[in-house]
Image (tube, rainbow, N blue to C red; front, side, top):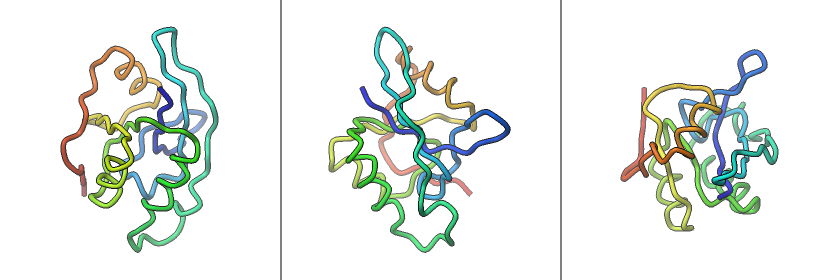
Length: 122
C-alpha cells in the first residue's frame, strides 16, 4: 500500500506533523509485508503559508496523483478527512507525536486503527 504521512523535520529525522494541512512535508512510502520503502518526500507548497483553510484539498490532489491509498496522521481537519475518505483513502491515526519510522512499524504490525472522525488538536 502506498502511504502518505504529513511530517516535520527535526535534525535528520522526520516526525508525524500535528496537523495535516500545515505539515511542511509529506513522506510517501510503499508499505508491504516485506518492509517499508521510502518513495519520496514532497515539500508542502502550502505548509509555510498562513492557514486560511482549504489547503487540505490541494494537498489531497497531490497525494492522489501519487497513488496514495492510505495516510497516517496525528491531526486532520474535517474537510481533508472527508475528502480523503470519499476518494477511498484509508486514514490511520497515531495517538501521539512520534518519528515517522515508528508510525510505519505500527502500521505494518496492524496496531493502527482507522480514524472514524476528524482529529483536531490544539
